[in-house]
Length: 387
Image 1 (cartoon, one colour):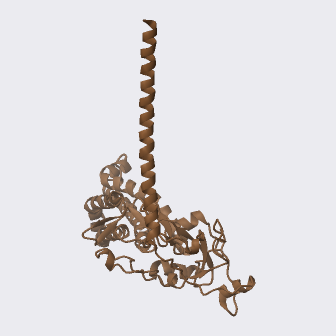
Image 2 (image 1 turned 120 degrees about the vertical axis):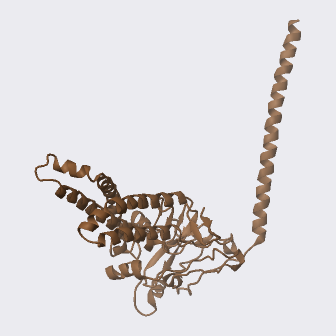
């Protein structure tokens, strides 16, 4: 459902109008603010109000556009491959992160892959998104690993912008108040009447702060605990249970300072020129797969809690294997052989079903005609008997 512009140089989600609308919500009040409010305050106090008033909204808009036009971390789809040796494929499987904690990943029937840790299939974009956070209608796309940082910049930056605008508008009203004589009746109302645009922009900024202020607090908590919005609502990790927790400093460094992984796609190249990247993130590349027992023995539902593998000689995976009396195989991804026969068989089944529906439709039509003819014949017979 993604949309592409400028020969693949820019991509958005399925609703770019949401991105344009949010840009307008930031840009139009900012223009009114800089044109009709800032000059009075800057001339009275400092030129810094003019610089900040012009630069800060542009910085917020830059983060917004970057978040809305960046590949959020779409995971490649693979062609359909049946399970090996006719066995049922695991619906879930366990993988070990570099820190030794185990997580459960799910088979994605749409993309025909096991989703990377922290990935989730977005039903709006119809993409599997690495480190899925949420789908944001205000940005017009899904927020994932590759555009989470500019999204944070937009949310926190807009909250700060709202506070700056409210304070600056209040200063302009104070300037108008101070300009009036002390014995002026209804001095407050007259000061507000001399700065009507300041009141309008102040009101809009207050409404905006009520929204982005709460959102900023929530995402500050998510950054500090290294959770995504989806994980927070689905799992509700405690501090000790979170398998991705690196401590307060480590979590903040990961969110703000870690290197953004490259896209899995080259959007300006043909399908044959696309790189095949099983994992572009360093942590993701180090993930191990733990195979417990035979295929088909996997749990029907994912475990809701995550455990730390025992330490000691042999590492986490080996410790788990020794506990069950089995040696853990070398973890690796198993690639099923591609079979064109299966795809051909499915196409034949689809054709047969279509033919069956066509025949059933014809039979229903013939049956209706037969009933109609029977009614007409009986009516004619009745007429003849009466005569």
